[in-house]
Every structure is written in C-alpha cells, then in structure tokens.
Length: 314
Image 1 (tube, rainbow, N blue to C red):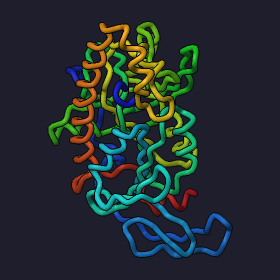
Image 2: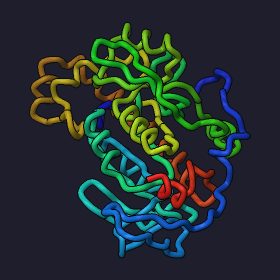
Image 3: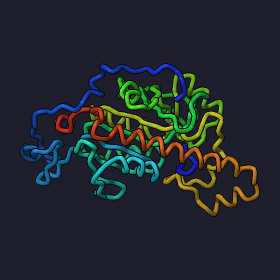
Image 4: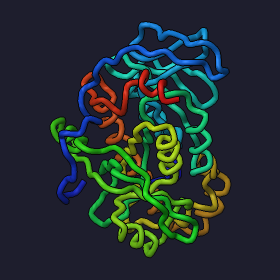
C-alpha cells in the first residue's frame, strides 16, 4: 500500500501463550564463527548480541524491514540509539539493550527481497507497516500478525504459504491492552486490489494484504530463522485505491504532487476519498507506533532466536 494512501474487531484470537517464540529472552553460550571470507574463527565480543569489527561480522537480535518512510519512522520512534549505518539502514537498540537493524526497503517484493538478502546476520526478520484489509470486519488501525504468508502472482493465483511466527503473541498483546488479530497475510504485486481479488484472497483465510512480506519471509526461511509479520490496517475492504495508482511513486509510495493534482482536479468527488485515507493513515500510524513501543520495549517478548545462534547458522 502506498505512503499517504497505503494501506480488531471481535473474531476469536487464534494464538497460544506456550510458544517458545514469545518467551522472555534467555542467554546463550558464545560460539565462534568464521568470517565470510573463510578466515579463522573469531570469538564473540561480550555483548548481548554478537559483533566483531575485526571480522566485519555483525549479528543483530532482530532485523526490521519497513517499506515506506512513515512506517520506518514509526519503528524508529520505538527504538533507542538510532544511528544511520548505510543507505536506507539504521542501527538501533531495543528496549532491553539488544541490537536491532532497521531497513527502509521501498515498495514491492523486489526491493524487499534485495534488502533482506543483503541484511547481515539476525535472529529474526520482521516486517512492520500498513496493509489493506481483506475482510469487512477489519477497520483502519486494527493490528494483524501473520501466522503464515501467502504470495499471490499477478493474475491473482495463490502460491505456497511461507511460515510466520505468531503463537502466543495475541495473548501477550491482550495482556498489555492491545487487540491483535492472528491469521494469514496475503502478498500482492499491486498497490490496489479490486473487490473480487480481495474476496479470493480472503477465501484462503488471509486477513490483510501487503506487498513485501513474502520476500522477507522467504529470506528468513532460507536462513533458518523465524519471520514475524506485523501489519496495521490502513485501507479497509470497501476502499478502492485504484485512483491513486497513476500518481503514486512505485519505489517510495509517496504521491507525485503534479500528477496527483492533474488526476484530482477534474474529479472533485475523489477528494473525499483522499481525505478519508489521510485520516485512516493517521489512525494507523498512531496505533502501529503504540504497539511497537510495547513490542520492542523493555518488557518485550523474545522475537526469534538468539543473535549468536543465528550467526552459527550463517
């Protein structure tokens, strides 16, 4: 879903509090590993996550991928010690002091896939941002966590589902005052889906749709680490975003002002939709930020595996 225009109620929460993915972080023995160039084993430095400037090997407890600028800012506001570490990348600390890598990928599966492939070692990959609702009972601002990710091709055919870690997260969230829906997340190649395509995706159980999570989930599976997909609904089931395609930047999701004016000026009835989507974005951004502040804060659940264990897999 695009930036300013991108894209829970009461169904039962499908989750379990017993999953080890959401247990509190535990310490792990410090292993050694070889550098990417095949050099000799390098002992880990005494940090809560692994890092060595000698070997240029770094391990993060979590790597978070956000497609859009406002999504990335919502994540960054939930972190501390946020410092640029490269184009579109920021090093940061979680609320308990562990290391986090934040990446702004740009929109779409291709950009997200390249960003995930280039990411350093991490104990977990996570996508965070907005999505389009695929069921009528989801409203703007509702939170969704994926228990699987289903990629759809251009004609709208579903592919094989990719795993996502969500067991116990709804219970953890409810204990902190958040309503989190758990279910499959669809991944589309288009900014806007027509109602029949949304209905088809919902028929396989998907609750919401984004454009990036399949690429990041596939990269996580290839590395043998968990994937977490966290989304906030921006556009609802009945919202039609087709009118924004012509003036939305395909990389950043930002509206191109000139094209937007050319599209909207002769169609004044569309302004009501623009105002509605802008209002929904403010709601989505606020609720996403509040939940991330808890999820990534001092009392966070453990997301994935220890950074050192992830390094041993690489």
